[in-house]
Amino acid sequence: MTFRPLPLLTVLSLVSLGILIWLGNWQYGRYLGKQNMDPAELPPVQSITADVIDLPGKSVQNIYGIADGEPIWRRYVLVTRVSDGATLLMAADATGGANPVDMTVPSGARLQADVRIFQREGRQSSRNLPEENTWVIFDRAGILARYGLGNADIPVAEPVQLTIRDAEDPSRVRTTVNPYGTPELVDPLPPERHLGYALTWWGLAAALVGVYFVFHHSKGRLRFRSQS
Image (cartoon, rainbow, N blue to C red; front, side, top):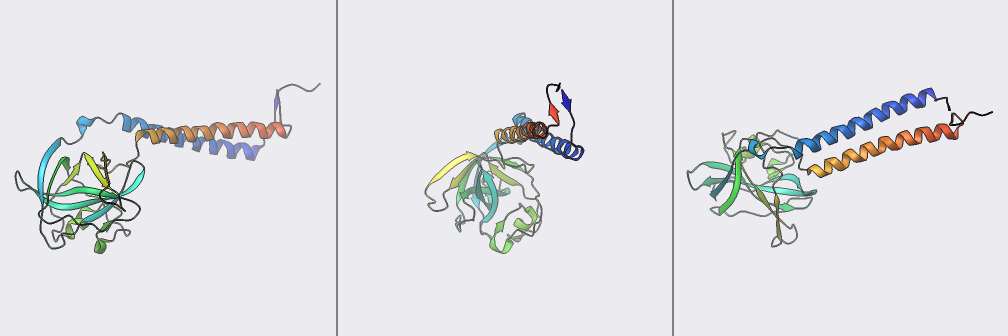
């Protein structure tokens, strides 16, 4: 066999190959991390009953997210837990679609759900629109400020199962596992999506190797038999 590689093409191909393999390994690592997540490390599930608080600025706060690969807007309200009077920032439900839907949760409404309760800070973002009660990035201090509470020490209550209402017909609802029911904000993609991405990157790496050798063969720089 004779092989005379093109120097520049070889360097570029090796760099590209390394990047593709790294991306595949990174996605596979995320797949394993989500697959091996121990539920025991999460806050305990609590069954609570809570009443929506009547406060100035009590409008529903819409927070962007993704569930089952689709965009949603989680609807948060400030509530008082019936059992002990504790104040919580609670996700009541969500609406599907690219844009939030102007829906209210009546003051004094009683909510019942199995939830995990924890602290979540989030961060500020120029994409958030507090004056419209719309948040692309979760910002706990900013959201609480909408209720006139500043940066009060109020935890978040996330339902284990999230109810999602159809944007065009709110009477149509579905439930799904709440991908935001963890203290750390992680992306909501299921583990299988990461495995699919890993296989895609690795497949591109294999294709690159194949194209590299086919190209050299077509240019007469790769021969599997010696010419007599």
